[in-house]
Length: 316
Image 1 (tube, one colour):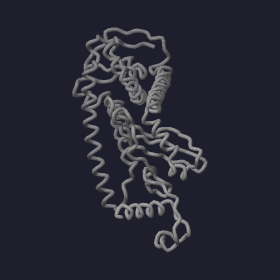
Image 2 (tube, helix red, strand yellow; image 1 turned 45 degrees about the vertical axis):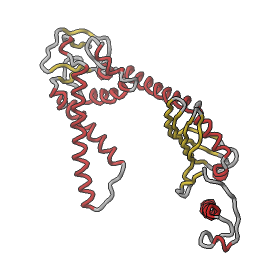
Image 3 (cartoon, one colour; image 1 turned 180 degrees about the vertical axis):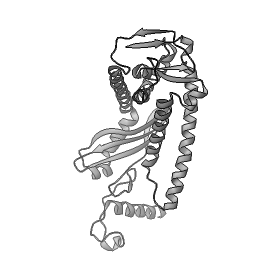
Image 4 (tube, one colour; image 1 turned 30 degrees about the vertical axis):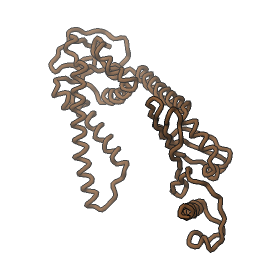
């Protein structure tokens, strides 16, 4: 296969392409706001609910329509036109829809390894980003003329093996980063204290059983400044009775972590504060009037009654 070569100054450089994409981002954002407002107005007039997932679908539709129509059929978006650059195939012909789709998907993977795929533009002989190399495209200045033609020992424009390798490498990098973060969090004093607190807490034991095991960390936010710090962890906990996600809020003072608040949402959607005193209390039926029709209090009713007893005790 033959492909064309341009003078280096005729290729679109990093900053020119960055500004073009920045302008496209502004245009896409404005387009989303306008279309979203119109759809909300229509939904309001019809008296129906606006599904939450519709926002993500709308973003995806606008983005792909913008990219495929403008880049696939015209070789340039408004941002590219404004900066005087366009996209072409490495053989000197117009880009195809297939190339634009592969190029757009690959651009996300170019950004994953610390945007190295984009920074490659600055050092590459033809100023190609990684996604340009995969899709077989150049970004050139409008009106640029090729200076020579070279034979390329490959079967087609799109480099499928490179595309597959990039996906695998990016996924491995993401998994490694997530694993590294989880390892550091699990090795922290905040996580160890949360684990100990949950495993010994009677509220958690009542919900999942005595044989407690800890799963994935759903979310974590740890801020440490010297001997002080804050942490907010949500940990999956399971046992022979069931599973819950416990949220713990911690504070670090003088180098020592302490639990400020901890709790979980039960199956009925009630938030259970497990930092409150736990009492498995039985009282006379007349004392529970209005709380339950059964002879035994539920967990929520126990908590309500116990709070009332604490309030009365504080008055005395």
